[in-house]
Image (cartoon, rainbow, N blue to C red; front, top):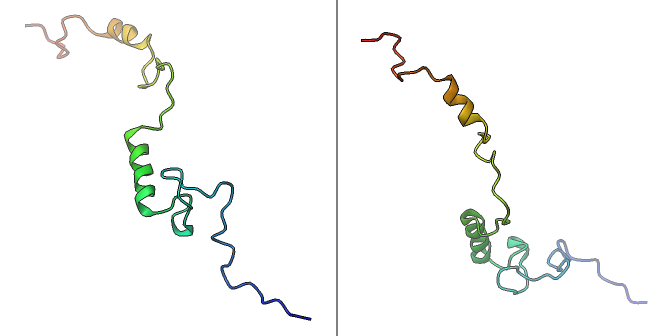
Length: 90
């Protein structure tokens, strides 16, 4: 009977999961840069994220900047007349 050799340490790590293709260029992935094939493709993907290329388009949120549409009108009502703010009229 022939004995089978035990797998080498780390064997099977480079086996692709799913498609095993780089999402940027389509080449086979490298374990060190997974899910990409190289550092270049990983950097291209990072650049796209930082530029906002992966943003999901949608309607603008009225409270996106932390101020609701109703707050600016309420803030103007609370302002003192004259705009001086020092408390003395000269």
